[in-house]
Length: 194
Length: 235
Image 1 (cartoon, each protein chain N blue to C red):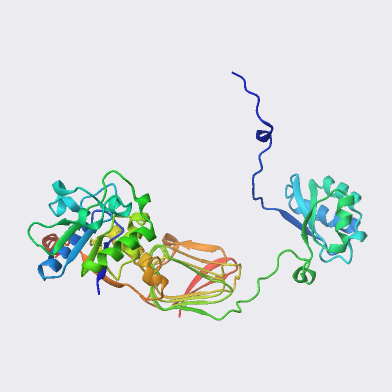
Image 2: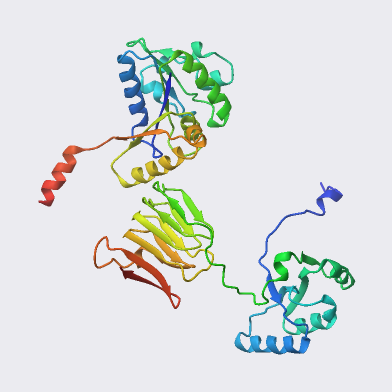
């Protein structure tokens, strides 16, 4: 049974794409057939992090609109053969995404993949909502600072109300990922206070 | 180039909302109404300032008893403009047509037994208490209509919990809590860890800055309204 994991945060720049890339690579290295999808339409950067920006021919929007099938759009990683990337479009915007067409895409991918990782864009608008809608598991990436914590709390609220699982009365498996924790700075500060 | 506008552009229909003053009459005696309005004008001289008013006739036995032309003139002398009627019995609607005044609402079962005083104490909370087990996340809002609200977990910063009755928060209260939302001044707020952004009872509120830190940290607190002032007591 495939699992859909959404990597989200609310706040921008906390490390969602980095986490999605690492997570996908880790799972692929363990032998699971994994695909990581960039839902940040218009501001794509997953392909940059995954190192395949020069091999993007077709993207998520092309597949959704039927210009290409998933096989043509998926980019196989050069180093790990169980890892695939589906890049976002750089020229379109998130309005092309709907629950139905995203659902259809994920159903197609579920047939071939063990793990589908959805790299959510920042914010709580359509892009983020589409990325989280079909998730079974959520990784909420948070930085140890006030705005990130507040935004992550907001995202948790949305995960428990605006997702397919929430509508069916079940709950998404939520996990907190703390990024940019600077151990050195904290220790230095603590010594200064002593 | 001057173009003639088409007839369709001369009139535009729009929906708009205005708060309306309602004058509830318990008797049709114009002299008595006039005297009461004079008294009101003495206490608050500018209370009526070309105010349009709808008359609630639900408490009158019949609209026929009311001398509408004289009532209109008397009200105008007080700077009040009669614009229509509400709670009119179905059989008497034709009367309004005769005086060219609009009907704002018909009398329903409920309004027939309504008290003539406009300010009525809201009904006491009568629905079963709502109990929330999970934390109220930022951006979430809970409204317990006609009942008390008990939150067993936290109210996170950016969340709002509203109840017509009392509110009890057992986790940290970091967001907003509004008790007695429909005007019940007897409603109370109980909490154990007050770090709220705003707390209010029946519209009287304290923002975070105005909230005094309790002497004992994590003490059980009760916030209630006393003569229009919020008071915090440690239990």
